[in-house]
Each structure stands twice: as C-alpha cells, then as structure tokens.
Length: 183
Image (cartoon, rainbow, N blue to C red; front, side, top):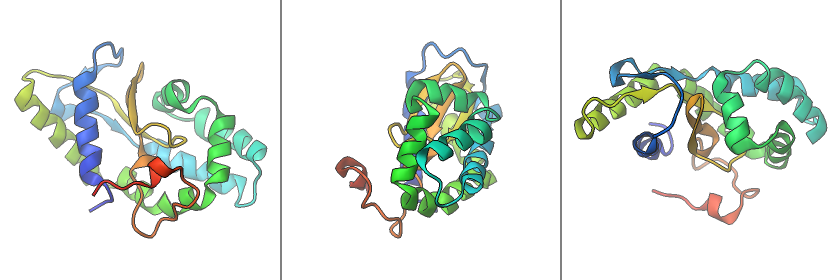
C-alpha cells in the first residue's frame, strides 16, 4: 500500500464532484483515462540535470525534458498551480532530498496498473452517488508542492508529489503545514 493512498482516492473523488467547467473530454468511470507518463519525464529531467545542478540549469532542463514534451496535463498544471519552470526548479533545488526520497513511491504509483484500476473504482463508487457522471482525463504530474490537485482545461490534475511521503522521507526542508501528517 502506498503512503496516503486513501487520501489520494478521497481527493480524486472530491475534486471530481467539484468539476463544473472542465473542457476536457469526459468518459464513463470504467473507461476513465489516467495519464501517468509525466512522472517518469520529470525524473528523467532531474537525472539529466544531475545532482548538483543549480536552479537555473534545472529550470532549463525541466522546460525542455518535462514541460515541452509533457502531456497536456503538465502544461495545464504549470499554468494553474506550478507557475513557471523557474519556480518549479527553485522548489526542487531547495527540496532535492525530499524529491529524491519520494521518487520510488511516485514511480511506483505512476506505473502500477492497480493504481489506475483503483482510480476507476473510486470513480465507479462516485457513480453510486451521481448516476451517469462522466469523468475527465486524469493526469498524474509532479509539481512544486503547492497543490495536491486541481482542475484545468486538460482535465483533472493531481500533484503526485503531495502523496509520495513515507516515514523514511526527509521533511526538514518542508514548511510546517507540509510536515503535518494525516494518518
């Protein structure tokens, strides 16, 4: 079981219920599309930049290897919550140990087919309350720790970095509210 997995599915359900003007195509729960490739793209960019890259170098690499080649969800999350690749690079540089420590959990969540199955199951359960509901594309992306999820023109956007923390992850570089745990 992944850290905060229950919170992850609750958050998805809550956000989906709040969707009103999302322009993304919508699907029935069992056909809901979950796009997770951006997590690997993010960490590919981190690898290319290298462990000692300064924030300017990291921003350039993130721009080229994560944002420019990313899904519509990355672009949408950039505008809605990240702000800019410069801001993302600054946060990642300041919290490099955190982002490195959550990498295995994020990669596992993004690549595990049971996660997508569980998201579809959560959507199906939501259909019990809202019969006939349809769901936009869900994008699992990595941001700058200022949003666990939101809605953009591309669809439902989940900031996966907010859900990868386990007991071994260093939290010293995080603001107080991010250090709090919901058990």
